[in-house]
Structure formats: structure tokens, C-alpha cells
Amino acid sequence: MRYLRSDNGPEFVSHPILKRLQQAGIETALIDPGKPWQNSTAERLNGKFRDECLSMEWFRNRIEVRAIIETWRRHYNEDRPHSSLGYRTPKPFKDEFQQQQPASTHRAILN
Image 1 (tube, rainbow, N blue to C red):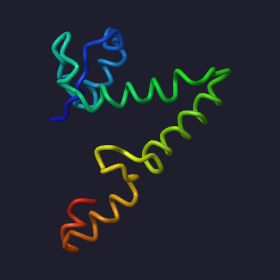
Image 2: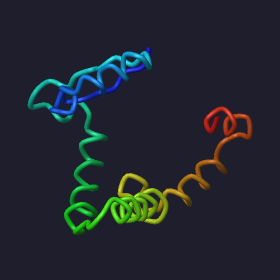
Image 3: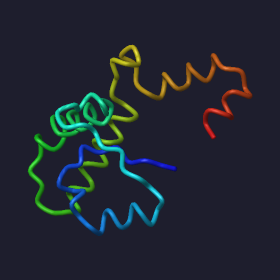
């Protein structure tokens, strides 16, 4: 069984979303009110995304939204140093990690 963790916000009032989750065999796992640390990874990403992308732009149309968000996503995932990675970017961190692992472990982790 797969779960979608959520704070049970207004997006889950939508019957089409709930129906789609049910069709996909995905159950909801709700975060207790006032306890965002129960899903701290998503909360941190949402904050970074809001502060570093959404709050910095004035979107004129959906095409522009897609382009700006994709540029930010690539920068965040590929070029931006992360404190959790020793202020390295994800690519060098991944390369270093793979070099430290036996070859059979690489395939198991990456597949």
C-alpha cells in the first residue's frame, strides 16, 4: 500500500483528487494539526520553493510559470549547494557516494 502524507488542507476537499487517489490505491496519511515536523522534508522544500521561486516572480501566464519553475527545480536539484550534503551540489555528492560503494550496491540503490 502506498500513502500520500498531507496536512489535510483544502486540496483534499476536492472529490476528484480523493477519487483519483482511491483509483490508484493510494491512502492518505494525515499530519496532525499544528505538527508540520511530521513531514519535515516536504515542509522544508515547500518553504524553499516559496521563498526562492514563487515569491520572487510575477507570473504572466502558464507557459512562463512552467519555464520558471523548471529552471528553479533544475537549479535546486543539480546546481545548488545543500547544507545537508556538506555544502556540495547533488551531482558531486552522488558521484562520491557511488565511488565509495561496491558495484553491486550501486545497482540496488539506483534501480
